[in-house]
Length: 432
Image (tube, rainbow, N blue to C red):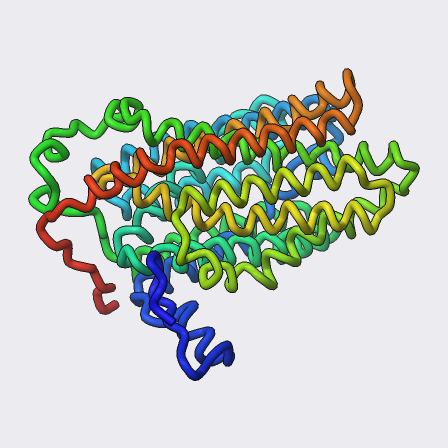
């Protein structure tokens, strides 16, 4: 069999043996990537505050749920603003300044948040925490793209997504224990983890921002603002389509309502939604081998169709088993879509503007995080949950069609960005 177009997985006599599989999945990636991967895992293993903030505010601080919802919204707003600022910092001053300043400032803010009980201070610090965490994210992804070759991008970004989900799954479990033991531990350990992430980056991850003489003259004239990204209609269309499909997934906030409407106990929601996390942790690393041979836009379109099919199954479900099946179906689509989306974002981003492109791309998810639960609640309240799930299925099909139509234009854009330029040296970590 021939090698795949967008990856370098070559089938041989070793077949699907675990050694050969791991070599094809994680082999050949630079040391800097593995330091970044480790930083991701550590960071997400300690992301206690973001996971349990609502529970903490209502159960420990005894604030009104409406106040807790507002504060959580401020965290999301701060994160959206932070990704824009972080993208500019990463491109103008470097990836390391953005990652180090973001993590250190977030650590101090998390600790302050755990020590205060004043409503105004909590709201302000939560906004700041979201902002500082957002500042580090575009630089982090841009560094992965900088240090990993184009043919390895898909599997590198998949491995990073896998680490995020492992860390989140463990953190959600540990945070439940910590909040019962001593709620302040949530904030102290989260701050310690953020400082540990910063220390690992400071010691092991070199600056990877492309030198000014390694990019074209038009990019050298770039002043470092968001204008270049906001004028890129191809990329903005892609970001909008991505936001819409994430809106579909975030609309699963209404899944507990649907379960109750079918007379199922509230406790059924845990096992049903757990299918999502279990599938991603157990199966995500097999995805690159399956999708690497296909065009990115077509892969994303197919993923959107699968996600839409999952919501159609949800509309027909009336038992725990059928609801679990619906989660299984749309999770398969999410597993296909996420690494392909990340790789396509990298393909569409000029090397000197990767931080800002990552920041703007993150706005699609920020929009979905707000609009998904909001819109799904309004639709369910007015038309019922069946109309919601069928509507989401239809929206997913429209996103699939949009990706197919936009595919040729994206391909031409990517080919233009791949025009010959001076070779970029791949940085390796300096000795400690």
